[in-house]
Image 1 (cartoon, helix red, strand yellow):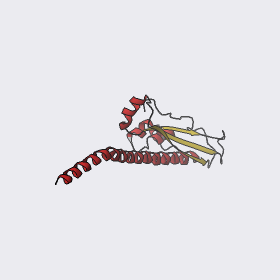
Image 2 (tube, helix red, strand yellow):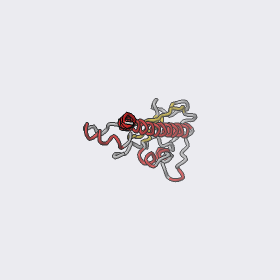
Image 3 (cartoon, helix red, strand yellow):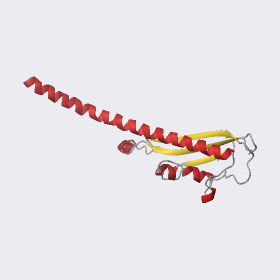
Image 4 (tube, helix red, strand yellow):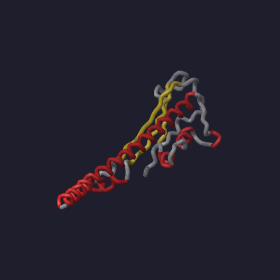
Length: 160
C-alpha cells in the first residue's frame, strides 16, 4: 500500500512539471495559427489591391475612400482594419500598359500577452512582435490615368 501512494505522488509531481510546458505549447500553436490566418488575409488583400490597380478600378470611390483605405477595410479583424498599412508603388516608375504595380499590406503582430513578463525582465519591448507583410505584383492591363490613387499610401499607425 505504501508504494502505491509514493507512485501516486510521483505522478502528481511529474504532471506539475509537464503542465506549464504543455500549456505553453498549446498557446504557441494558437498564436501561430492566428499569425498564419492574418498572413493569409493580408496576402489576399494585397492580391485584390493589385487586381484593382491593374485595371484602374477603385471600388471604394462611391464611399469617397482611396483604394488603400478600401483595401484596409477588407481586413477580417478590427485590429487589421484599423492598424494595417497599405502601400502601392510602380517599381519601374512609369504607369504604361505592361508595367508592374506592387501592392504591399503590412501588420504588426504581437505573439500574445503571456510574453509581457519576459519583455519586462529582459527590457525588450518588441520581443515577440513581428511585422507580417503580404505583397503582390501584377502588370498593368492599361495605362493609368490620373484617377488611380497610388500615392495615398497608409503607414502602420503608431500604437498598433
